[in-house]
Length: 362
Figure 1: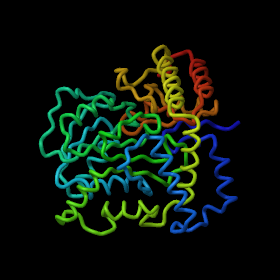
Figure 2: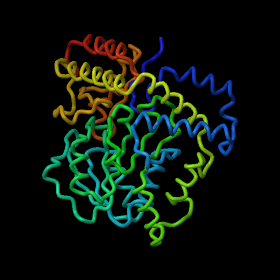
Figure 3: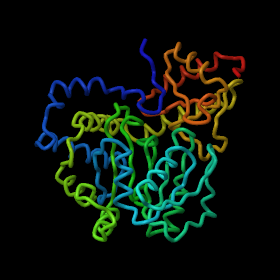
Figure 4: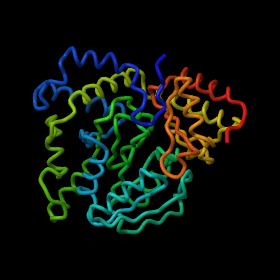
């Protein structure tokens, strides 16, 4: 019996992955040139499908990156003139903050304890915040930044760029890209693909700011320029040898998701999340780590478990693979990923398996 990977990334492969991989091998996709017409068509179709899936405005560009770390560095070098502001309530936001400082910028931050959120109505950001960084879904704390909070930030700071880490929330999250200026995600989270490819989304406002920063000599190097990158992208090209196979597979999986429909994907995600949170609220040994329902993640559910090693071993015997959270809670908390590739039936079985442990585990 095959295992079900409830890890957050890499996670369970999308259920059509095997078919598309075989097709890719039959078509010799791994051998085609990233400068040739066949790849250009793959990239063109990928962009068209992703714009439809995420409802991206016309001025958005879709850039292929080897990882989100690279996308983050490009964001810092192209879009932060001197200073930035970061909302931090977990390791993903903290890592971007630290990288920003490490690249010579002056990041400022507002921190919330793990598992909690921010009171957006009373937030007053300093005037220097040319870029505001938000992690939409903090994978290892199981908290989600409410969309209403992003709208509040946009209303209060219309001239600032809003940069969103959407690594473990897409394609479920119904984000409004009319108020977001750039975002990034890895395909090995919610898109159910192997690691090795990330997407950086940027709009025209970002390109204009990048041009200004480079013109003023605040960023060095032609190949770091967003203007240069998007100039290639409009011709379906990349500055480096891209993960051709990854791009092909992503395009195909997005086609499958479009066929299924984003409404259906969101309904199923919410059903599975509701099932799991209800179980955690009634289970004798397990608890949801995030108490406030309004900020509970639908895609990465953090479980307060007592002895994580017991649960990892127990669930592995039942063919479920889980991971512990990172940091100080790793021995007492584990994660359950809830992505489109995870079926309702698998979550119903998981619920039964977890309920079978009746006595508290300390």
